[in-house]
Image 1 (cartoon, rainbow, N blue to C red):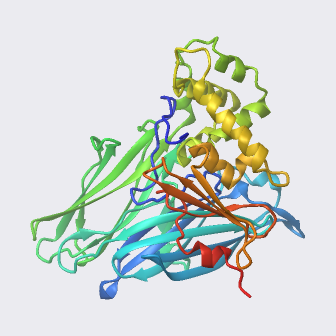
Image 2: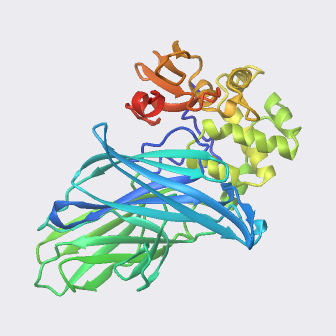
Image 3: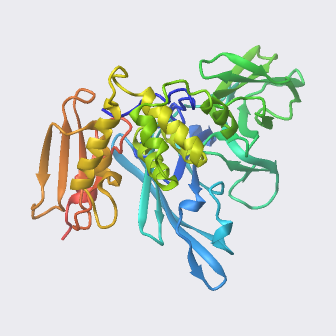
Amino acid sequence: MLRNIRSCGLLPILLVILALYDMPANCQQIFTLDAAGFRQEGGLIYLEVYFMIQRDRLKFVQIEDGYQARCALSVEVSSSDTLLSTTNWELDDHASNLSDVLPKHKLPDLVFYNFPPGRYLLKGTVTDLNTDSTYTRSLTVDLQSFSDSVLTISDIELATQLQRSDTGNKFVKSGYLVIPNPERLYGSTMPMLYYFSEIYNLRKGEDEYTVDRMILDNSGNEIKRLPQKIHKKIGANVIEVDGISIASLESGTYYLKLAVKDSVQNAEAVKQTKFFVYRPEDFAEKSKTVDSPANSPIDTEFKSYSNAQIDEAAEELEYLLPDVDYRLVRGLNTEARRAYLIRFWKGNDSNPATPANEFRALFLTRKQYADDNFDYLNRPGWKSDRGRIYIQYGPPTNIDSHTHDLDAKPYDIWYYDNVDGGVEFVFVDRQGTGDYKLAHSTKKGELYRPDWLTSEALIRR
């Protein structure tokens, strides 16, 4: 199957955003989803769910005083296949001119809950109300109980902005304005990593406690230790906030680790969280070192491409790279993309000894099949849900097609016996127009919605 392949050295493999992140493989997304948990009274967990929307991916329409984008957001919370909560709200954005809407601009938002400890599935949805396009992400969170007596630390919320504030804003807590960074991405345009966390159950006695802060590489090795912080105790429960420069870090995957020590109880509490650094200049330097032969069919193909063709070829990688890697590639200039594409396809050639690139040939064959069979109006078939699954996993072992059931909308079930011991994908034609959308899958990392038949397909009379 065409999936989870290496990035060929030009960009680090940036793995799933969270160890808990149950990310769909569909990279046609306009937002990122993340969450963090904090202690609440009565043994509950105060769960914050964060959105970060790509502003330039929204449709802005002209209004009297400029341009406006409108989104509908929702979060569904489930546990053990039982829907516990659904929250819906809208978000409007205004721009004086379309030229003011840039790729680097993001729209943050959040919603919060109180839940007992346990495992929960969060399904976040963003609908662009000006195009009626809907995007979803799923996130699995394991909420662990926080002790009422032992020194412990909450989750660490990573942020793009942190400053003192006493305004009545949803992003203000404990006297700080904290703008979340669900992407967990830092670099040239965001050289400061801000974080917010809470420390619980400090003991009376000694007046001080310490906080050690370390940066670990992707293998867990300590590569940077920041100066130790010594704080006066102002209560049993306190917040820990700060900003850290990541200017010395190269592009890659890292962890921020906090270690709190309280000498009165001879205890230490440790928490860490993942983040990413990306700088185009790091990539540009590495792209100059491409050392494979420059006269292969792959070189000939991509060196002959126009800028528009390079853009489309970069889009092809959306099903083959982790989401973060793909967005970083899309942020490169045309020539850097060209170099990346050449190295990428060469590096993933299943048989470099032959003139042909079998890996790319397989991809193009599947893409062509998707275009021939799954196109819809002006959208090419390879950009559909069925097209994505076909490209990534190949022809299904079997298809159970239901196009004329009297009590249900048209739907197909694709079975793959050779993937993860056997998985299925369910596609529903919700509007009866031939546009089949993924509604459920048993493949880990895909949209999991076992109640798809009642919630998506059954016709209610």
